[in-house]
Length: 252
Image (cartoon, rainbow, N blue to C red):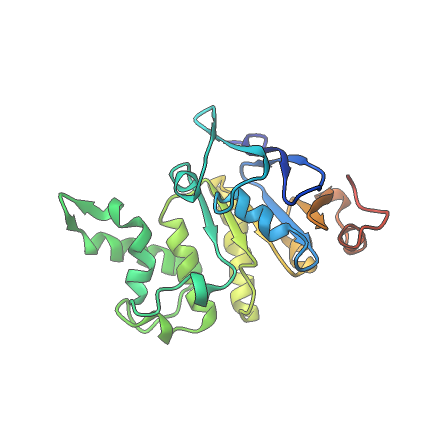
């Protein structure tokens, strides 16, 4: 799948009453940034793409084997290979009472089951592969997830999504609250997933510098509308900031 392939399309969507509709695409193998001042609609946009919140107007479709398919909720989105990483890992990400391995495996357990029997060896082997890919540090697979640092908990959540074999990953501020080494590891992993696996990543980030480093393009939100879209050749700190504050200088 080439980077020219449209993996997801949104048409005439409206995030809040009285706001202007907007449209756009997410391309395979590209990293799309999402930016805006806190509370200006960018998180609602990401949740709509994930099928978690319903659209007021407009439609979202994803390309599956050459067919444009709509989806009504998060479960249908997941069946089409669209996965979502929440912003608050403690409140809506980890299962605090479960082990590291179980936190990794819960959503993908059907893949590892046959006739009602769970193949825990296969789960461990796959988790080991993602542990190496993401440099996850943990005492053991059976250790409680709460024994891990925040950054390593976030890596387990990312591995959980990868075990679902996604086509499109929607990541809500994925490096929030992690240390520099973990942040750099995530950057390396995101670039690899896009370039080597053709996965589309849509990353909402509160750090403009992060978007400038990682993304092929950025969609900027202001007052629940799409203020501007910039490609890599035109992205700069000044232009992203201009879009966030509704000033001249952001591309439409």
